[in-house]
Amino acid sequence: MPNRLLVRLYGVKSPRLRRLVLRTARYLEGGEIRSTTLREIFAKYMGVKVGLYTNGGCFEPWTIDPKTKIGRYSSIASGVRIVNHNHPISFRGMSPIFYSPALGLCDRLLVDFNPLEIGNDVWIGGNALILPEVNRIGDGAVIGAGAVVNRDVPPYAVVLGNPARVVKYRFSEDVIARLLEEKWWEKDLDELADRIGEFQVPLDGAIGGGRPRPGENTRAST
Image (cartoon, rainbow, N blue to C red; front, side, top):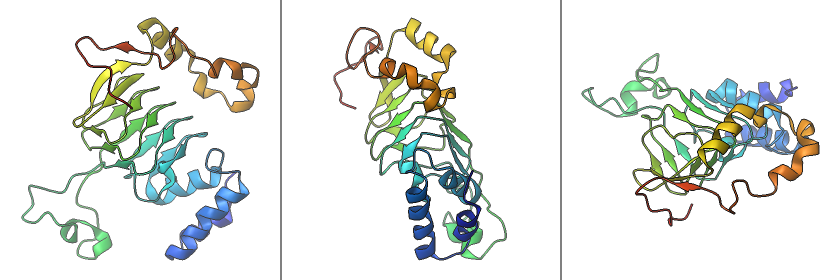
């Protein structure tokens, strides 16, 4: 259960106190992977829902826009930025001075946030940028470091570059279908205890895995 006192304290608009609250939650609850308090804080104050066992840059305040939902067992590197809204290019002025209530000239936000769902067991590399055009990043996908993603990403795809493109898939179609049906990520770690060895060896017959997308270069590093 979340620590209700820490959740309430985070509501105090003091940057120093808020940093202390986040550090305390990490310390008391064994880090980001298991902390329910961190998840409650980010859902309540930032509109970002983070599944259990997911960790990394998703717990850096305001690097991920509201209306983002991240699944379980995902890994978000430092420097990742998820942008779910655009500046209003149809307005006379595009500055947030005119559309953000935080700056005092309007009483409600005048731009819309586009909901984004990031699946389970997703790895997003350092300094990747996810743009507002994206609605869904599929289970098991890999977003390479520095990639600029402007469209949905299929399950188990590996995408690289600017704009990001699919360069390969982690596994064969049969293996992907089996994993998506199995949905192992719905289980807690203690339920997977007798299967840990299955998660520590390659699938599909090759280290690094992957079937290439026809016509695509698969040599780029993630």
